[in-house]
Amino acid sequence: MSDPVLRVRDLTRIHGPGCPRCRELTGDHHGTNICPVCGSVVAVSGVSFDLWPGEILGLMGESGSGKSSVVKLLHLDDRPTAGSAVFRDRDGALHDLATVDEAVARRLRDGRFGMVHQNPHLGLNYRVSAGGNIAERLLCSGERRFAAIRERALALLTRTEIPAGRIDDQPGRFSGGMQQRLQIARALAPQPELLFLDEVTTGLDLSVQARILDLILEIQRELGVAMIVVTHDLGVVRLLAGRTLVLRHGRVVESGLTDQILEDPQHAYTQQLVMSAL
Amino acid sequence: MTNDDDFGFLDAVAVREIRRGLLKALAIPGYQVPYASREMPVARGFGTGGMQVTLAIAVPGDQLKVIDQGADDSVNAVALRRFIGNACPGMATTTRTAEATLIQTRHRTPERSLVPGQVMVYQVPYPDPLQIVEPSEAERRRMHAHGDYARLWVKLYEDVVRYREVALSNRYPARVHGRYIIDPSPIPRWDLPKLHRSPVPHLFAAGREKKLYAVPPHTDVVPLAFDDVPFEVERFAAADGGRHRCARCGAGDTFLDEIPLPDGTRRWQCNDQDRCDERMEAMA
Image (cartoon, rainbow over all chains, first blue to last red; front, side):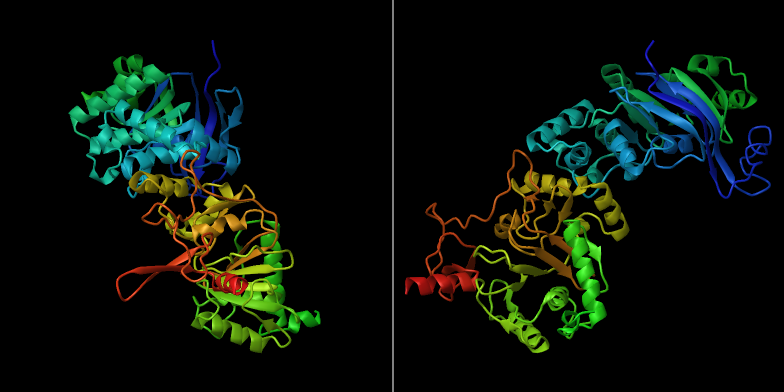
């Protein structure tokens, strides 16, 4: 069996001064992630998992459960207070995302990772064209041939079902679903090894959601890229993720195969989530 | 403190600070060094940065030439030359590139090849090439530190898509010594290749923006360009397919000004007045 793309151990992020009792006095048993002693917010605590090549892992939980915080730490938008997250790139080199310096972090973000945000305004540059948005990622990773950039941008737009004729339109003229697909095209441009999808279908109508989810599955099958999908939507994890972690108050309260979690939830919180979806 | 520090309009502390800044700028080619730009007897935006650098490095015996849009006799050039001449006793002024040891310029690099011993000082309105893509200076500093110039490249990409070429007639971004990208001040594209491995130091100063940067002698200055859309200088193409020539001296290898005439026709003339005069004298 190959090595995991990502090995996360005891990942913790505390916002605030922190104290020795922060982790002990917060969490599921205490019903809060705010430390009663120092007032710090324990956004993520003791999160551990492995992500295997080509796998789609779901992070599920309600708002404030810490799922987006985990993704921010792994995408190097934030740094953990404790723990490690070791990323193995396609060349076999290991990078501890908790300790990499800014230059390496930028190289990883630009060339090895892709991110699709819930809000396309966070992921797209609305002052340049759709092609320009894709070009930026390619230029970040060192491509300097105009024709090659143009060709790749056209291929990615076509792959994400955006008409090639709209390559020079600005994203502001696109529908919500197209903007989301453009984000996916942009994220895929440098052929990333790890793709983060943060609530990508939230706020879209059902038919558009279905097309985007199908697209993500097709891309995963074609490219074999490992993905971490953040969602509070059980339907999304059911369709996309093979394995799922359920988070609450910054802790993993249940993890396992997605079907198993949804069909036979063990933790009271997961049972509540599944029940409320029904 | 030496006697040199007391020479000119600036006080000794200012002279030393600017010289230190220039040394740092020369040591890290293309890096923008902040400095405490002083109040000068002209308004910000009229060459106060260039003036401060000239005053800080000038020593008795220097010969100063001031160029404004290629001309030596424009109001700005005359006023600056006169001020520096008055403020720096023992320093001569000239309009001849060949005679000058210090050349303060705005918009142009002389057509005549520069030789060791000369120093170019540029008046810079906007020192940061990233300003066209990022308004926040803090973010621009981060981008320079990380060598994160992708958004500047995207600007070139968008230009090539729209116009089939990069639509920057001046302030064309160039990478210095393989690292920092600079805004080479509003010199035309024509002048950019003159900075590449030039035998003289090119010092850039923005008074309003309080930044110094430099291209040391014999340093690579490479304009940003895609591998398959090469950098090009102005062509001055005539309708007959040839190139316009200077109406005064007949030069066909200089940067030309296009001058509309009252009868509706146009005339082309060397922008570098000294180079044109020199050629006229040689022909006489």
